[in-house]
Length: 493
Length: 101
Image (tube, rainbow over all chains, first blue to last red; front, top):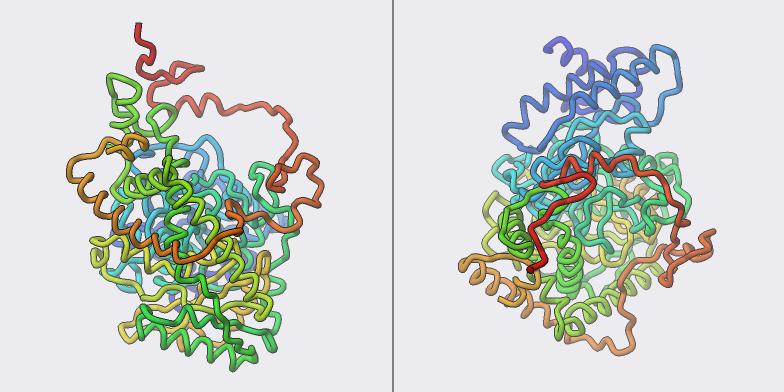
């Protein structure tokens, strides 16, 4: 094992022992390492770090080694290697994986083995990726700290007494700790971008409709998106190209052609207009975070981007809109957990009693709270005042974005008003936790793509995230700005 | 609690107290939406990708979202689906009796 690890380190990993898609490919084609050896190497790292981090909930070595052996056979035969050949990846536990336990971080799906793969998972595997296992997350992706998982919190690999962010905390932690080269997360209100920011790795939420949601276990269907967390922006681009595109199994997936995002990622950003909404840098932001975001903006200006001051006047309403709409959709989506077709069943004398007892015992506190809020917002007498009102304000927020993109090519903001906080520090007040989602939920509601890239660290050594939004289907532009920022040393400003 | 009943959730006394308090604070906060005049603003229920209407989907739904053709395909996973059920009796799921006689 030690020998393999040594070879792996020499094979093409960076100074932290981290591999990239390109270095895996180079090492495999030069035959410095086999896909099987690389897989073994990652499993040994997981074995070592996961007891502390709790980033993985399930591993699927049989599936991983079968794939690795297929890749090694292709190499031996001199066949063309697909885009992600041999790249070890991790999958958030809300994405269905055939035969591999998928719990959504919930007791109600303990032991559930989906009968099919999510389209994004299938596309990764068709592109040669080696799926190592399933990553921990807040229960049904509801949370911003990963503390709502029924299987225990994830620890931030950069500061183990801190949260990794959420809800894709396990995916972000796995990538940051070099336990996977890339991971899939899902983002409904910030769940890829915020943990990316907290763990110091790029994380991208593509445009709504860019990536098929087939096989994604639904939280809020008008907001849910699947996207990558990776070690580099280039890898983010590569993985996104693989998973994007129309899928007949998701009627909301767009028939907009997929660009080769990696091919365009190096395009110069000189002359691009970066919109800075003053509404995102006002009260409530930690001064240490603000300083690094300002420094990040200055770096982009140094690269030749033109700063444009913007107003996005409905920003302050986004959290209220988001929590009404997301919980309303969740209350409907989660009605399916009734103990009949899958997962937990707690027996009851009547059907109704079985439903009520199953759901009481299977769901955790945050999920129950959101189901209650969403049920209330949709209930007779309150539907117009809450649900419909929130949908109307959603239109205004989308309009803010449309108007901003008339003046700017991309919008640059902080990802989160705070850096990673300590475990347990913020669990007592749900509203306070929700309010910290302010910078990410806006783009979620508008349907536009956004990335978080590392932008320096606070004096405590905690990473700060810079968020870049682009117009709908403007992934190329977003990745191009993020890449230029990263290459110019954004992570260490 | 009426909402808990609608949501098919059996809650403990402690949960009723805590959720009541949390919902109150969130709904109070949400009432800030009333500051905005939304007269004449369309409710946005879904993000519809641009251009989807023009693309070759004859059966576009009213929202413009393309729908695939309704073609039956074989489903070979019924066994796996039932294997994951708490109380299967292929090809059925069993539940407590719902009809009183």
